[in-house]
Amino acid sequence: MNSALLGLVAAVTWGIHDFIGRFASRANGQLITTLGLSLSGLILLSIIGTWRGTVIPSQSYDVVLCAIAGGAYALATLSLFAAYRIGSMSIVSPIAGSYPAIAVCFGFITGSRPGLYAWIAIAFVIAGTLLVSQAGKSHEETGHIEQGQLGRVLVLSIATSMFFAASLIAGQVATPANGELEVTWLARVFAVAIVVPFFAVRSMRGTAPFKWWPALIIMGLLDTVAMLSVFAAGKLTLPELAIVLGGSFGAIVTLLAWLILKEPVTRIQWSGIAMICGGAGVLSAGW
Image (cartoon, rainbow, N blue to C red; front, side, top):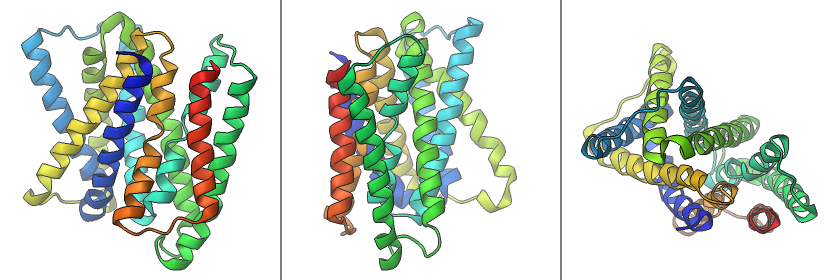
């Protein structure tokens, strides 16, 4: 197993997860959806951890990293589903999946020196994000984005990207000394702890009828597989590849939205998506 393959596993599972999440968040609200999938993932990891005799990370540094990974994950997921509730998937997903550029910048700050191609790829990701954002105006006009909500959709999508980057980077840093299962479990505990207080905000509360439980459980399983895959790459060479390729989930979601939901995808938007995906691909080779 290598980092690139783990990244592709994450992309596919997150793509399906987000597609289901679009319907779940609109029916139940982003808060109950996030809590439901987080709890189901935590229960699964607890069962596996108990069977394996998993040791929870206890070093202060590792606990802090797991707290960052879990807290940022919770905020990213809340932002993502809030964006899905009012925006189209083919706008939100590519922007939310642009976090590889942030991962490359983090690598630079911590001593990694990307080559010329990597910097060009970062520019492609940023430019592609801008193109997709501009295409959002047509979605607002056709009703795929609620009137007057485009700005909020873009802010939530960008916030999702930033929080996901923080979560995945922190998780990968903590994994070599502890293991992906241990880090993912503790991060998920912190995620649940972050989400629960939001229920004090009455406007964010929602309900989850029993018919939606299977969907939330499936989402939790898919998300857990994706997080385990990306965190596991932290023990391998070029762990950034998993983050970079995992970000291509946006293209999968957009394709599903285009094929199944018939969401409009303009030529400009396809160009932006291609630039994001192409930039992510070049980043994987540009290290």
